[in-house]
Length: 372
Ligand code: SF4
Image (cartoon, rainbow, N blue to C red; front, side, top):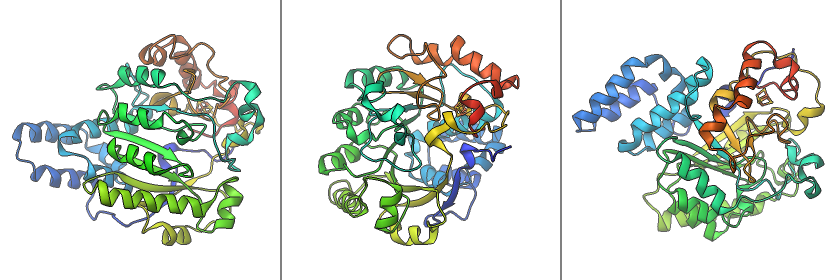
């Protein structure tokens, strides 16, 4: 059987810059001590003491940072989101809506990273109909459905969100509506306007995808990329932030895929640590061609079926981005049904049941995927 890929354990290395000496449980109690609102405090304490076991899942440096930077009046919503994100997939709990929605502003990417499904022409060849940009109207329709009901939103998927010129309007539309809003980008197209759009929309986390400190190795992995330009853009972002948004609580992270022995986390950390808040290497999962991979023999049910939903640029829905050609679902489309209907649809539930009943190995591409 192949090595399994556990999403919640996918971070291999993380910089310890802002690591806390206390655990998450103590950290939250410390924050509460500084809060004078007794009603909120008792709501929190109740929640904390009932769910003590879950705090071990929060004891990761990047989550501590999110807790510390969260506005105190939004901390409860954030912790509830984290609880659903961490615990629901483990206990296979299903609610009306998923803990997290992953939205794809663009399936088009300006890069062709060696470990990415963009290298598969069945996806990236425009003739095959998978390439496109989400309209602002569709984006608004999604946000209207989830505002106040879901806290976790990530803008990223098969392409780079910055390719879509409507990204700024999208960010403005979702500003201040979610406590765990994340944007992923390779930063190549992150111009001055986009920096302002990101910073003024108060998003919680900005993730730069970059895997090397050396321009040649970077280019070898991130084909069509240019590390010097990315660094210039990141420095520009930092200048704009300190000059125009000094109170911004945004967390910046550089996240690299650990793909080859040539990559070195220490070098990566030294190179990036003054530019971002967090430096991370995540485990490589063979995303780039699951359909032609060998059968994995993994037959445990997949946690993503209880964790998040992916909405592509054209409204199609997928349970994960491993299925980048959208073969698992034929009927799920956000232009026809709302998220709650899709999340609890026959199509989704039938996939979950097959996973729970040891039939994952009969389903393609789940039988060639290592995610558990
Ligand atoms: S392909 Fe199947 S097993 Fe793999 S992440 Fe998607 S739903 Fe889960």
